[in-house]
Image (cartoon, rainbow, N blue to C red):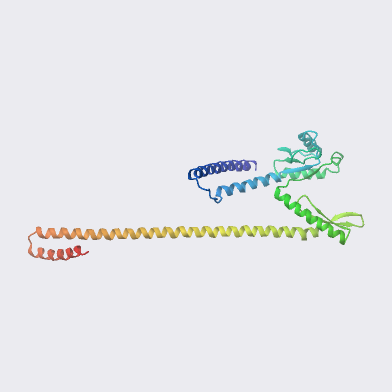
Length: 306
């Protein structure tokens, strides 16, 4: 996985260099022509570069964990080393940073970057398992997966949905509650009157959330397949146009060759006629002279016709 990321980064840097070179060439041409530059469609390299950027961004986001309410007084690396030791987590951190601008009366969230998404999920799982320990339960921190800008926008929309569901639940029954999880799923909880505890309703989660997400995934996959079919049809049409063009060029070349052959045959016939006339008049055989003279005269008439 690390080697694949390295190769993708190298390819991305090469594409950036090519794009910068192409942009500089376009700028020189624009200065020379003194005309308004026209918008050019994205090239194949631009499409590949944007796809690779999004892929690398998603992989990096999946390998990151956000910690809230972690004080900024001490060293972040020292704090994380102590936390990993308390929960018995042994994977090595790649980077520890803070989100946003430092303010006086607020604490910025801490972002931890692991080597892979497996290490990030392992860290969160070990933290959840260690919440009952005294060393971990006293910490006022909260952890969650890192979200990209698109994921954060979707999370806010689902948070509004959860609030609306809770408002309706309060009007209907006080023993029902809804909660938005860190993974973006909304869970329904029902209060058990026997033990006075909230228990999750897995059937509602399956019916309301999973099916809707499956429908979205199926719709997106179908749209991708339709786009691929359209691209294949476009390629087939382009290939057919190329083949037809090549056939027309071949036919044109054949016609030109036939015209050249006909012209050469006509020239050869006329040259042979002249040679025969010369041979008839140089020889002294009466009947041959007469025959060749008639043949030559008929061919000379043909030769003289426009």
